[in-house]
Length: 149
Image (cartoon, rainbow, N blue to C red):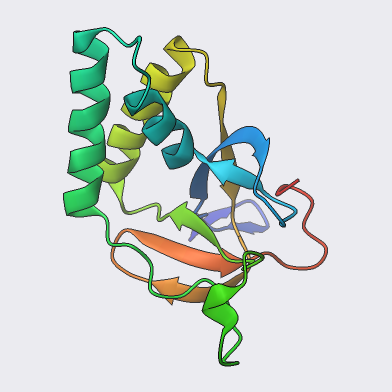
């Protein structure tokens, strides 16, 4: 903290979580699909040139080896919740996942270049955290959040 005149100034660190989405809504949910859906669609495009195919595949393989699939997407403990399509949890990169975020922006650029408009959502409080590892969280949005739509 720093004293300036009569004001006490603090250097408050604000952590911002990042979510990469496209405009398409998730089936049965009020939020948009994550960019991995678009990346897999691009990788299956039969008209894709070899360089782009190799690049998107390389990035997907990297994420597959360096980002765990979340084990939980909902706060519920009811049996059978995993069968429902409307699980509310959304994945976010942690601020500390710098290499993952760098790779995510690389994938975003590739997707944007090939007609998949990707938007980066930022949130200080993405919701109720239901899963967390070193690189990501899964959070159920708070009821009053409007960024998810």
